[in-house]
Length: 638
Image 1 (cartoon, rainbow, N blue to C red):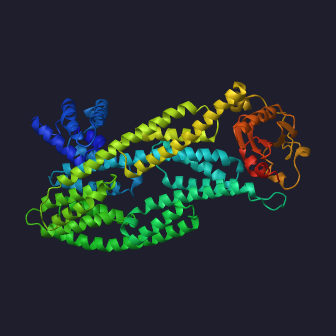
Image 2: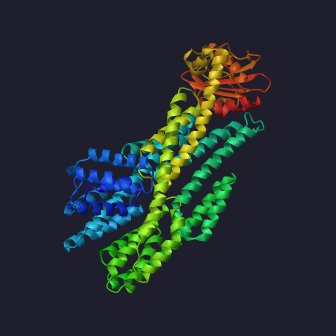
């Protein structure tokens, strides 16, 4: 395998791999050599001249120069002896070794195609035939799988960060689901460290976090002491928001999982659009999605069985027509996909056209099959480039029909259209990177603030750093990148508003007030005796509250205070509580009605009573505040 694999991989999002390979081939011939014999200095010269010139046809010169420089820098890190093998049996062995890295991902279409190639390439080599086209395609598939794995690990790291943050919030519930979630997080963390994807475990962990978060929020509105529940609208809204957030993620997962089926069936696509409208309106239910999943699973099984029967008919025809190694690879990969329960719509399209080409060919089957493969590859590549499929669809249909009739066509104009869209997408990616860098830079200015907004922004900033390091992105990864940027920009605006508010506290009440707001829990605590509405919870039986609250509070201390006119009128004389009360004056001046604080000395929550007073509660962990104190904080009733 030649040195050109690296630039083809790194620049394949701006110029089609096919065009790049042709550029390297023509440039090598012009220099009196071959692609396989290119050394680093010669390749560097080609990149700076022919490749740079071609890139400028689709992107601005500064961007073209930047991307070529990145390729050159990466090329300098590599050595020909370690990174690249020659186009002989060693390449096949390297390909087989590379394929083993992806053994866990046998259901990926790229892996199935690669297994088909590996099943044919050794036989072709023994027969003395040229196996370079097959091995080149195999290494291209390895590159695609490497990209898919890198993108998956970035997404999994983001999921892991969110799972950890949620676990911290629900840990106080202490039930069996919490322990199951902790076990799953540990498994995912270990897999992440090993560079392995665990999508099933991530999905189970998401379901558990939704269940636990809903339990935590719902427990706020549960009745205490047998009294009628007070279903506070704010709490109900939070529960509903959780449900819609969960259904939105489930719906997106179903769209990805059943994308081939939805593309193949207009009636099911219409259902998807209807569900999307419900999701946008906040009316999509988990029950409806569960039923839809079951229906889609059944429909897919029916389609797969029908495709299996068509595959067997086409296989019989192609065996009779003797299509050669490429046809065997296509048949083998399609069969393996069927065996895994996957649809093979694209493969059947290619098999049908291959039958047509072989039947129509008159001594030129090889050329026509090559054209057919080229056009099918163009069609697949266009799906991952914004706007390309829409423009190319009618042109591709005409070209494929012509090849099916045995006509020879020039695919170059079609590739030029695709590359124009690829250039626009590369420029768009550059703009996304600029936006991501802005968020990361601005986050550094507000990261010192305490609070959930800043913590969430920090997690998204970490994700943006990882996403920016990715090279060429798939359509799915690009969508995730855009969504991360949009979410982070919204959180950044909130964090900056909070930062301005903190500065206003400083200017109005002095630096001591701001220091107290950020570091109140380092100033000491009360005597631990507890007090207020909920009483103390420690080892002294006399201090434990009686009645239905006893079981709920048995694992933590919980204290409360009532503040009127800036003074504690009910609750213990606690020095830290007095500092919190002082801060509530600043909060009220800023128009705040709810304050949540946390630190080494405990968790605090305060709600305004709407008349200048405050209800305040403190516990060692967040759980008792949310489970027991929140109804009183919000309504003044228990």
